[in-house]
Amino acid sequence: MAAESHSPLEQFTIKRHFHLDMGGVDASFTNSSVSMVVVVILISALMIWGMSRRSLVPGRLQSTAELAYEFIAGMVQENIGSKGKKYFPFIFSLFMFILFSNMLGMVPYQFTATSHIIVTFAMALFVFVGVTLIGLARHGLHFFSYFLPPGVPMWLAPLIVPIEILSYLSRPISLSLRLFANMLAGHTMMKVFAGFVVALGFVAGWAPLLFVVALTGLELLIAFLQAYVFTILTCLYLSDAIHLEH
Amino acid sequence: MDLAAAKMIGAGIATLALAGVGIGLGNIFGSFLGSALRNPTAAPKLFGNLLLGFALTEAVALFALVIAFLILFT
Image (cartoon, rainbow over all chains, first blue to last red; front, side, top):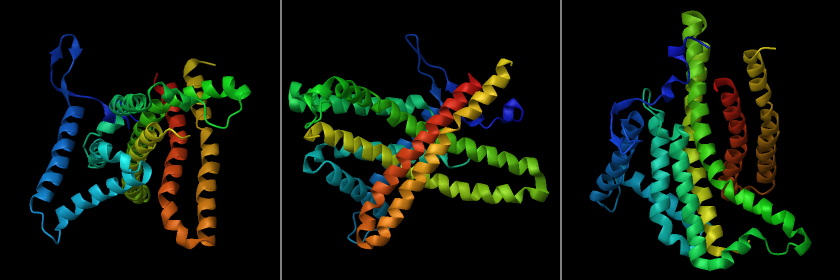
């Protein structure tokens, strides 16, 4: 690895723009906060500006907004059914936030908010707690039958129930770690290969440069894919809590 | 063996998870292609599931990467 100031992990450092101390809690406005604010502004701009005209033949912006809406509406309908319509706003904003954070991270010199586990873990924990509460509210104590799948013989229950509980509790960890690790690994890999371009110089540097270009395409795909996976898993968890058949 | 060298070796060993991930990804795409050729009309419907399986499997590789980073940088 090169000198410390050119480490491929340098891009993930948090910089405080101005200090803010809220009763012992460090609530400074950091570069991570800036990128999250930018993401929210971009999403709002797309949805408000895109839908303000509301023409029958949609323009470019309106098409994008409608495409995103229909994509998530289809996903919710397919995975949860008509009972999931209530949760559509939450799932839509979750998807748009992750997608825009990931995509904003692909802009050079931009900070990726989702490359920090605290951000993704906060979202995953919110989904986890919310889904559990919805399940409890809908089914009451019957919700705990989720941990004993139907058709399992009784003598297997002492083995199955702890496994099911463990897998249920590990959901927020795997959900957040997947998004965080994908973003971290992708951006680190791009920086490492970009470092090769500089190290190999003018003569041989074009080979890793081509690779970086291809890698950027792959990373754009991953950025979308991870937003999709996070959202679809949220849908599946919600569907589990609402229908409670398996 | 000093600690720094042991860390390097440990991080290298942590990447062995990629062997399983490679097998898994090959399996996912191989079986998707195989079944898509048998029944091409059903293939577009399963593309979402393919991506889901791909991302879930790929995540295992990234968990290994996180472990490797933890070993190296802590």
